[in-house]
View 1 (cartoon, one colour):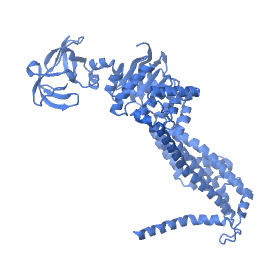
View 2 (cartoon, helix red, strand yellow):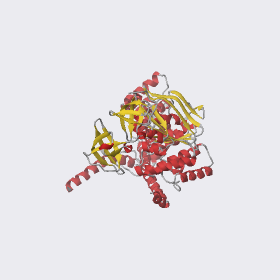
View 3 (tube, helix red, strand yellow):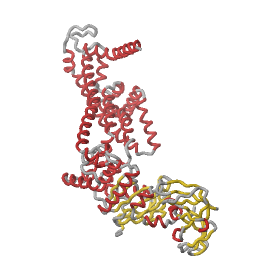
View 4 (cartoon, helix red, strand yellow):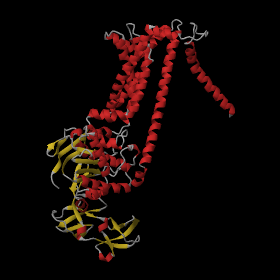
Length: 347
Length: 278
């Protein structure tokens, strides 16, 4: 990761009397694939619209290569956008849609034709120049939208939930494709989604947001394995979140039982929350574990079974490939590393 | 069952006869050689001759056409801009303006006419061509807003943003993206304004002055005595309207057919690509 290309400093945004962004500080680097992840209404799209120039921040700074651009109109920014429903121009064919930006710049026609066909090749739509965009499939329209944005050689490409309208299989394909395109053109992609799997599989950096506040910034692995608080743990993947307290470094107590762990730096007896991922818990014989319960339900999920084990204090969700009968007495086992201790979220 | 069918045929025939016989009579008697409006005495074109040599009529046609054209152009631009602006305004403003916009459409013409007349005289504007033109722009604009606004509202709000994102100034976004997309609404507005303006009598009659008269006013003045020149004028107007209607109704179908043929050809050309895409 080399230079910062975009910096958000204390950015806020109010719509009427509602504050949708409550002080956003974020650095975005060159060649980075950054994802803004969060539930709908968390402000992720507003950040994108501010970077694109469709909204002005109420407060704070938006720096592009070190220069404040929050007052620069969208048509003067070296940033292009792929819109949620593509926003292709239905009265133009594929070629003219892609060439729209270059035509505005009065680029020579032969140069345009050459660039358009190179772009269409990049997105896998070779020979589609004369097609009517309204007759293309969702995935093809998506590709046209990407080509239309990239042909202007932006420094940053913004993507607003671009895969939302595609079916599951096509979405997987496009995830892969987008990542490939990003590596090929070598520019920064800022991607907005509410789909955690999409975010984890594509990004270099994931920014988890809720209620106009950034909850955590980190690599997909960090975000998944070291969630900073209950919201992140809950939003990213399945998890068992258990209230407990930290007895001392590397010793945590929850459900009335003490467990060794690897987390440090908490105050003595501080109230904390503990995350146990369902796939990290093993079902063992009752006498081999401190935590005992009975199987309350089992559901087949394809790759694994989802088993709910009822213990004295709570239900645990477990993902395993082994079948266990409902009503069976079992023990739950996990290693020290599987226990992840978080600061308790203030409500 | 069969009886009902015959009944409905007779009903439709009577309706059509009732609508069209007066028009046909007018057209036939425009070719009459005598002044009578009841007896056809022989074929002649003399009323058409009288028509083109009558300076009042020729100037009235000029007034009607020029006012209709200018009023249509001005009210289309005004109405379109207003509709686009409305779609981006706050809801309260939008609802209020759309309701206010309906008042001139619902208002009896005679009330609009008298109001405009009083307005012009209270402002000491001399009545004539300019006042008639202003009045026409005034009553045409609401029709343009009504026909353009639904088109603007159905647009993806991101289209203008997309254009600006790709480097278009707001004005370029308007002319290169928004206007092409709402063209059908604009055309409907143009047609409505033109016809409303061209055949308007009541408002024109009240706001004109200085001897400026459009076709409706001159026809009204001529009906006070028998004058088959009106028939000739009416016939020409009817023919122009029929041709316009034919063009307006057939043109989209023809264009569509041609496009479909083109699409089909394009589809066949790269049919192989559709397969590889899957």
